[in-house]
Amino acid sequence: MSRFDWIQKELKNLKESGLFNQIRTLNSPQGSWLEVDGRQVLNFCSNNYLGLANDARMVSAACEAAQRYGVGPAAVRSIAGTMDLHIKLEERMAAFKHVEAAITFQSGYCANLGTIQALVGKGDMIFSDELNHASIIDGCRLSGATIQRFEHCNPGHLELVIKENEGRYEKALIISDGVFSMDGDIAPLDKLCEIAKAHDILLLVDDAHGEGVLGEGGRGIVDHFGLHGQVDIEVGTFSKAFGVMGGVVAGSAVIIDWLRQRGRPFLFSSAMTPADVAACLAAVDILEESTQRVERLWANTDYFKQGMASIGFDIGNSQTPITPVILGEAPLAQQFSRELFEAGIFATSIGYPTVPKGRARIRVMISAAHSQADLDQGLEAFEKTAKKLGVI
Image 1: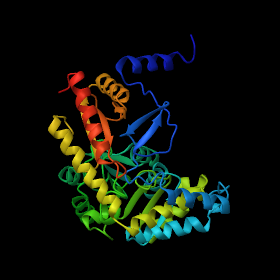
Image 2: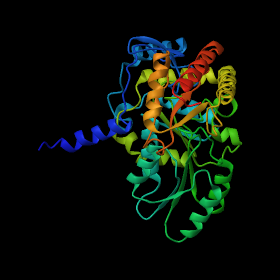
Image 3: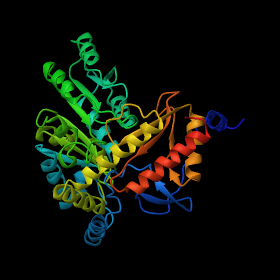
C-alpha cells in the first residue's frame, strides 16, 4: 500500500464528481482576447476589470523600474527591502482611498492573513460573513480568535450574534468582503459600520473586487457608500482592477503603524518587486486622470447582463461586473465550459467547495477592454451552448 493511495483516491473522486480542476495554459498577455492552449479565444475569465494588465504605460513603468532597481528587493521590508517606490505607492494609495495611511503586502491574500492576525488573537472574537473569501477564513483561523459567523449580508443577524456573545471576548473584529467574488453582490457596509460603532468593534472590509470598480473613479466600496473615515480597515489587492500583483491595507495611521510592527507577511517575506510597484503607481495615475475606463466597465456590464437575462439564464443577484451563470451541478458546468471553449469562449466552470453544492456555475468577468462585438459574440455562444445542452 502506497503512502499516496489516499491522494489518488481523492483525486479519482474529484474526477468522477466533476470537481477536478483542469487548468488551461495561457500563451499571451491578459486582454479581451487570449491565446489559450494554442488557440485564440474570447476572455471571460480574468479579473482584469479595467484592461490594465497589458496597458503600454504599465508595461513601460515596470520595465523602467526593473532597469533602475533590479528585479527583486532581496530582503524583507523591515530589514533592507523597503525602497522609495514602496513608500511612494503607499502614500499614493492613502491619498487615493482618502485615508491617513496605507501599507503594501505581497498579495491581497497576504494582506488579509497579516492584518487579521495582528489585530486579534486568543481570547478575542471575530464576526465574519459566512461567504467571506478564503483568505479571510484562513486569516481568522490562524489568528487563534474565536470565530462567529453571521448570515450572508444580514446586519440583523450580525447584531444578534454580537449581543449573544457580549462579555465573552477581550477585543472583537467584524469582517466582510465588500464585493462577494462568486455572486457579485455588495455588502451592506453602511449597516455594518453602524453596528460596529454601536458596539465599539473594529470593522474590516476586503475591497478586492471593489477597487477600480465601485466608487468615484474606482476608489472602492467605502467611497461607494460615502463612509470615508468611518471604516477602520480596508484590505485590497493590486491583482484585479489594477492588473498587477500585490496587496494593500488602508486606514488609520495607528493601525498601519501596528501592521509595520506585527504584520507577519510584511516582516517575514520579501516585498513586492520594483516592477510591480511601479506598474501599480502607473495604474493610480491612470485612474486619477480619467473615469472613462470605469464607466466603460459598467456600460459593458449592463449590456451583457441584460443580454443574458433576456436569453433566460439565471445570473443571480449580482450588483457588479461579476456575472454568475448558475447551472446547478458541477459536471454540467464543466461540460458547458468545454463547449464554450470549443466555440472560442474562455469561461471557466466553478463548483464546490468554491461555491455550494448544486450552485455550480460559469462566472463571467466583464472588462472595460471588451468591445460590444466581443459581448455579442459571447452572448451568441452562451445561447447556442445552452440550447445544445438543454439548459434553456
